[in-house]
Length: 54
Image (cartoon, rainbow, N blue to C red; front, side, top):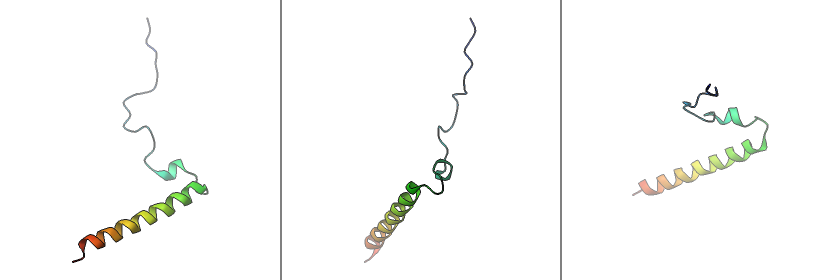
């Protein structure tokens, strides 16, 4: 009986590691993601500044 030949299952990743590869440059999802990512970073910065102030 012959084995079924398929794809290699020893992959390190199932998806690409970059959003640029997944989302088209003109897609509205990219704009929304970037907006909320920037807002998240601003909130983190405010929290860190608040925690480190005397």
